[in-house]
Image 1: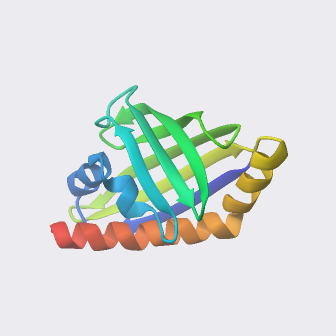
Image 2: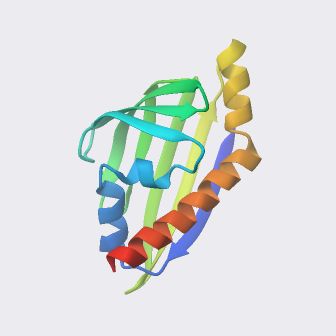
Length: 149
């Protein structure tokens, strides 16, 4: 099963990082162009909450249903319930390093489907694409937290 890890720090307290990720519009803010996020239904972040959305990659709609697990003050995991991959579990962990510095650790374990969707996810979730996506997320997280600060 492929694994992707990415870590970065943000100059913000743990509470601000947690609040940013609990905001139901965070997914839109963290998705790099040219991908467009269409939110179908997003429940407030809590154990067992469900998010339904479509990621538009050009004309290709990736319909996604995620269930939140292991929700704590220091992170959570999005688990794919339905979507383009055979499996996807994305864990977000927040570690305070000081009063105004927090490390965010992103860990993804995923599995491709066979056939056409497997080809699509192998391209979209390749290491270079995931690295680009999470570098964008790092910059966007820092930018939004700075604006809120």
